[in-house]
Length: 183
View 1 (spheres, helix red, strand yellow):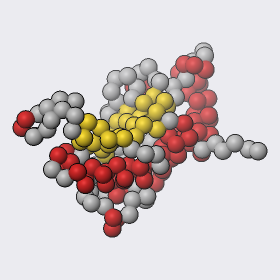
View 2: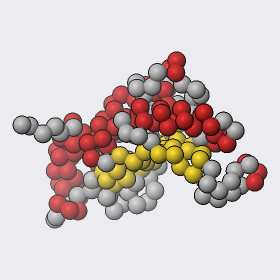
View 3: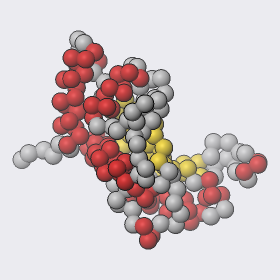
View 4: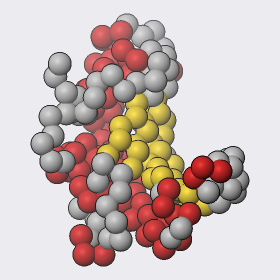
């Protein structure tokens, strides 16, 4: 029986060979790879309306195909009426085939549905080879039903790589198909 391999994983196998040629790696362990993808959604209004947090968890679960985890406030902020331990967000950490499938849908389907899309910011690397992109509307994902959403809200997608430098990570993501904005 043949084991299922996502398309993006197959593409990575080809890209890794190109990266060896570009950066001259001597070991296969030096080749940068995508380690995990973290999709998170902050719901500040959940302090007054718990229903918004439940809908955020449901929407993240639909988008990623994996159950979302509610996140809690780390410290109290009196100006926002926020207490330590209150649930104010949701996140999903994706590994393996789930990660590859999400990246495929994200890069090839969802980003194409963004209004006036000219590419993602090429300078959103953190200095350690990780990339973060903010999405202003969760409705760009085809899994979300327009009629059943409580409120249009944004989400963050953090792509964690094993690359040592931002240049290596950018080259990896570019070759994988991330549509970076042309300067």
